Image 1: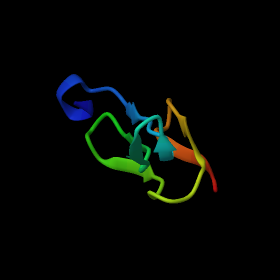
Image 2: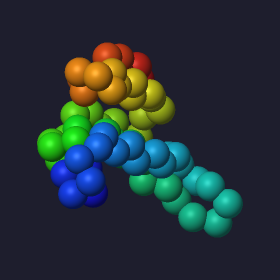
Image 3: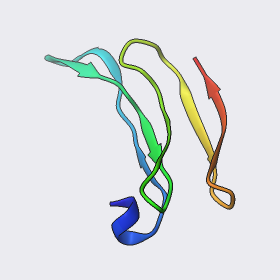
Length: 62
């Protein structure tokens, strides 16, 4: 979708048990050219921050 619409895309997801299902995490950001800029894993809590002008991931805290 990022490449198709030429814009950064953020996918956000929780991890662990939520309501009646297990969430898989793996939050991610793609640059407008469709390249994956950053992704968190499926077990650790964290945050991804992207500079929308440079499309670089500025901070990845876990």
